[in-house]
Amino acid sequence: MTNLTRHIRRIPHLAAAALLALAACGPSAAPLTPAAAVQPTDTPAPAPTVTPTLAATSTPAPAVLSIWWPEPLAPLDNSAADLLSEQISGFQAAQGGDVQVDLRLKREGDLGGIMATLRAASPVAPGALPDLTLLPRSDLLAAVQDGLVFPLEGLVSSAVLGDLFEPALRLGQVDGTLYGVPYALAVEHMAYHRAGETPLSWRFADVLARGTPYVFPAAPPTGISRALFSQYLDAGGTLDASNHLEIDAEALQTVLMFYQEAAAAGVLSSAVLGYARPTDYRADLAAGALDAGVVSSTLYLKLLEEGSGLQFGPLPTESGGRASALDGWLWVLTTASADQQALAARFLNWMMNASRQGQYTRAVHMLPSQRAAFQQWPAAPYTVFARELLAAATPYLADNANHAAARALQMAMVQVIGGQKDAAAAVEGVLDQLGGQ
Image (cartoon, rainbow, N blue to C red):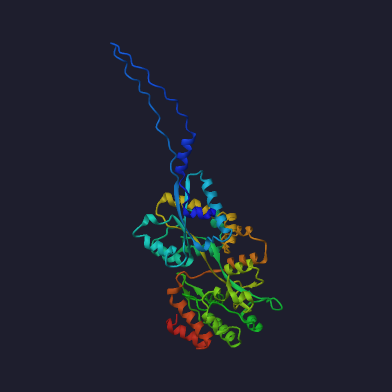
């Protein structure tokens, strides 16, 4: 049984151990002797002397901090499990034994997942909710709107907040208020097999000139393709104050013309419309059956660990810059108790120590949200590249699945790659659909 498994099953209450210690260390009882015989007498016996006894003392039970931990961040088949256990044990020791961490693993998906369980338990069993958990960015806005999480303003160390990458800080904000502290992050970029000279540029024009085919997840389960989202913003598209995409006809025309020309040149195949995630083509990319493809940083780090020789580069964009969509897991408060919030904040700040965060995120193949945490990573070219992507990334849309502009852009891209419309007609269709905004 691993240390983490013991934490998950429930860290033993220290009260029982304290009682055993008292029993073992208490003074030995004096030997019992028979009472002296009472002799009859005419003189009244003196009243018995009552000696006060000290009440038995007991160690107060430690405060319990309940945490739900998502399975994707706690793989039990590698060193991350033991590392997490060490960090939790270190926190408990630093509290002098006054705090017990109750860690529960939760699935990522809808059924039985963290968000679904918070929603189900909140109105009927609030006592079953955790004090602290990690949520993906995609759930944060809904959790705030449903009143399931509480602001973190004033509870997070200024050293932590000051070291966050600026896009990472925005990832945890809703209407300017901090509801989530970014912990383990992911971005998207290109991975490719070295074929001759290493590409010096990933500008649209250069990608078309090289003619190297590539794939990307053009059909995400919900919302807009992350590659399209990043390329559109790089070309001049913008987000409004509510983090909704605004329609810029020129920027959209630029991106859709690239897709049109890439499809005509064989750089992009309509097969990409069948890919929902980079993992859909992971095996073919790793084996060399595909020349290049868009991957998440998490997938790329896993492939590197497996010995893959894939190279890395930014997404194809009009500018050739470091555009990328930022996503990841964030710490959120799920208790209304001020005392428990303060306790949860102590644990959060402990885990956000740059050394601990750097070690753990690397173990689970994700990127840390703090600059200093990268000092725990090897001084390798990919580390430099990942830092550059994080600094330039844009938080992915938390509510994109229900946003009309995101859906319209996604459909326009599908029509162009699939050959149903050319770029100009697809742009016109978007403008007509959204009232020419």
